[in-house]
Amino acid sequence: MTALVRRLWGPWGLVLLLLLIVAVSFSVGQYPVAPGDVFDVLLSRVFGFEHDVTPAAETVVLQVRLPRVVGALLVGATLAAAGATYQGMFRNPLVSPDILGVSSGAGLGAVLGIFLSLPVFGIQLLAFVCGLGTVFLVYGIATVARGHEPVLVLVLAGVVMGTLTGSMISLLKILADPYDQLPAITFWLLGSLASVNLGDLAGVLPAVLLGLAPLYLLRWRMNLMSLDDEEARALGIDTTRLRIVFVGAATLMTAAVVSVSGIVGWVGLIMPHIARMLVGPNFSRLLPVAVVLGAGFLLVVDNLARGLTETEVPLGILTAFVGAPFFLWLLASGRRGWQ
Image 1 (cartoon, rainbow, N blue to C red):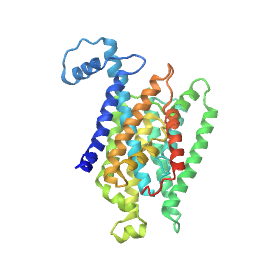
Image 2: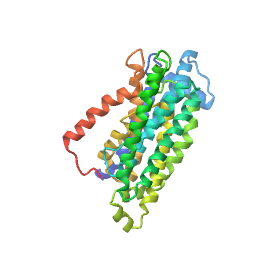
Image 3: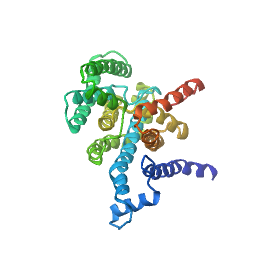
Image 4: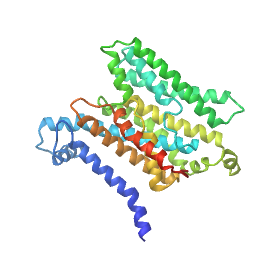
């Protein structure tokens, strides 16, 4: 009975904690809003109730904090889900969503869009297209390089493409206007939700759901992908086709959210680790727990980013402050048998 209670409380406890973080996120910031006023504004918008909240507080809740809260939940959950997928598929705990160059490719597209002075939608579209294009190119290289371990070739090709796109980003930063374009490029590359709106999130949501659907529907097959390819094929699994599906799904999700948030590191690396510590390697339990943890973690980080100082701190800086010590602890503790 005790084991059953602990098993039920684990996931539901995380969900309740996430809801608490969401409630607090609407209240904290440079302009504090009482929790009661937040609920009055949200309920009035959903059900048409009248409220006596000041117009300033209503504007802060609906136009400033609501998009950021929803954006942090969506981006964090997506990066964590993609990270769990990549780690399980490549059988490597060091893998993160940018291992195949999707983040660096999206970064190159966004930097190019800023350099060309495109509108926000153009920057996001170019980031999304370049992120997907980079991974397709990586997979094409791996397909041509036959006779080698496919997973190793994919990872090495992703590292090479990441280095190449990084050098191209550096070149564009040198050529960019140092007073206008360069600050925007630097801030985008470090990740931020300052300019995100509900329209942007609605635009990327279909891509996220399209990528998440096969991960959930084929979640039991991911456990078999943790075996050697020969063993998985002996059990009737087409590893090549499944790898294409999982890579495509995780890449689509990552490119979609990176196109609106910028490059946010460490979420897809450390959140699947924590989820694995809590519920084990079974992907059926690992995926939803990683999604909840990623959403809550990035929401907390975004609260700190807009509340620590008067000048907003980029998300990538804060996630690195948390992720790097955690990863060092993971290495020092010598945890094994992660999969």
